[in-house]
Amino acid sequence: MTEGSALIRGLEGVVAAQTELCDLDGANGRLAYRGYDIDELARQATFEEVAYVLWHGDLPKPGQLDQFTVGLIAARELPRDVVQAFRLTPRTTDPMRVLQATVAMLGMHDPDATDNSKPANLRKAARLMSQMATAICAHHRVRGGLEPVAPAADLGHAANFLHMLTGQRPAAAAVKAFDASLTLYAEHEMNASTFTTRVITSTQSDMHSAVAGGVGAIKGPLHGGAGEAVMRTLFEIGEVDNVDKFADEALATKRRLMGFGHRVYKAGDPRAAILLGLAEAACRESGQFKWFQMAVKLHKRIGDAKGLIPNVDFYSAPLFYSLGIPVDLFTPVIAAGRITGWTANIIEQHEDNRLIRPRGEYVGPKRRPYLPLGSR
Ligand code: SDX
Image (cartoon, rainbow, N blue to C red; front, side, top):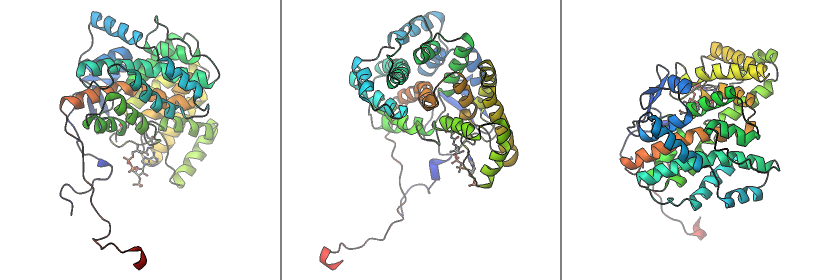
């Protein structure tokens, strides 16, 4: 019998660390970063301010924000080799696989790559936040046979992201909605991808290695990959009038409905409520309102029938689609938000580290002798 706790599948409810970053109240559907409620941050803060809060602990004062922003802008350029690598990558490669490889390549070029000190990790966190945005957009342009759009030093992070993606200067409403989305995705306590970055960090490996692991974890459809899957579900349904029939068949066949359910939130995901409002405005503005109407109808049908709640990925899907983000870039965009939380957790893990090493309960064959080949 293995000494230690009994098996807890999926580590549900297991407290793996103490953290000052994220207060996630699953029973009451509330979320705060460093004590600041997510609703206020999404509505009033920029993503840059949220990154500063996660990395430095408090809202930045004006001079601090100016200096921080200058550093993020200066860090947007990609090493030439990385863009060259995009040109050599098969055009049909999943952008999340490209992003994971990109993070590893950025580690090859980062002067602080093997330095796990807090000052070095803060520098790397800012570089990764800026470079991942540039890389997602540059790869998308290259896979389309286009030249990357250079980062615009006069635009904030969210505006520059949309600018590099589309080649157009985005409208203020789109920037605000996208900026709020990045904030809503920034940090979420001990989710699978963040826990992955902590496990890798606990071996005293480096930030790029840990973030590459986080990218691999968030790629999965049960985690960050759900956003793309929600949009594909809406495409499958096709029209508002088809929602009820689809929902009833899905429930009858016990289909796993992407964008619904959560391991921790049972009363509701506060991020979904905010994204619902952002999606309604953006879908109306862009003439893509039917996708929002379909989402609302599906939310109601599934909620009434099975009591499942929409999670963060449910309404971000029609929102991202209405902002002109390609569906297979939804998960990279989610990673571009979560990079701030991953790096904050990596820094926190180093501050009070112990190797993360749980046990396994052996349920295999009893001890038995080796048999020579001739006697098997
Ligand atoms: C994110 O952890 C985080 O914080 C993640 C995240 C973050 O910000 O980092 O919030 C982001 O990943 C959100 C979740 C995105 N994933 C999806 O939308 C995929 C669909 N959701 C499910 O697969 C599921 O709800 C999970 C994975 C999110 C949570 O799964 P759990 O806690 O392991 O719950 P479960 O699979 O054991 O389900 C419990 C019951 C089951 O019914 P029974 O078989 O016991 O009768 O609820 C049912 C499930 O069948 N159920 C669903 C369902 N989710 C749960 N049934 C249909 N569709 C669903 N989506």
